[in-house]
Image (cartoon, rainbow, N blue to C red; front, top):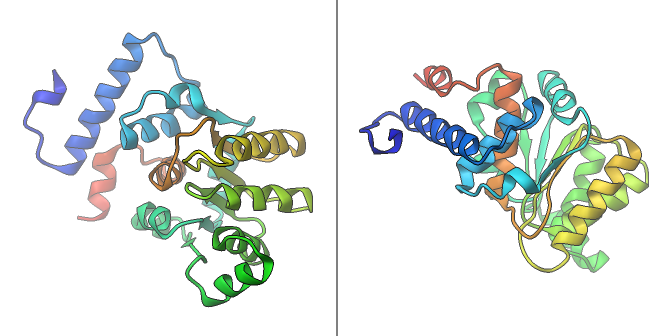
Length: 227
């Protein structure tokens, strides 16, 4: 079996992992839609959780539209520094994109206090003003997702919203509300229904889209970028 071989280089390990994922999906009789395949496999690779085959939802043409936006240098905004840190710096650089997280800015804490909300929600409100056509990736805070839902209803039209927060309070409802709104307004959306998700999942989705935009799903090709 591939997982028992002596892989040493990161690209070899990643490729072996992807081969194992493909094999297990085949054994389960799962055929992923071509547009969603890279994202779903990247999330499974990150989490070792095959439940995402069923829980990851995509509005029509989401990946195609997100990839086009990234190729134009669209900014990515995350709700946590962890998600921001997990996004490939080399891929961002090659596409002339930037990843931002505003939650640590002093004015965000002040705005949250004044509004009686969370810093994550206040950060999304500020980010919507700075990057109204950006890609918003929420992996931790359902309050950030609910803030984005309010902003969409008020006219925000981002390139993509990734809604994959993890937890128990308002998590499932926020994802369902987001997905329904994006369907209504024809906005690109990737959401992980249910309780599962996380900053690592948000970063994984972003990376899958970045690698697709660069025609660089092959890990050996990406390893050559870093020498």
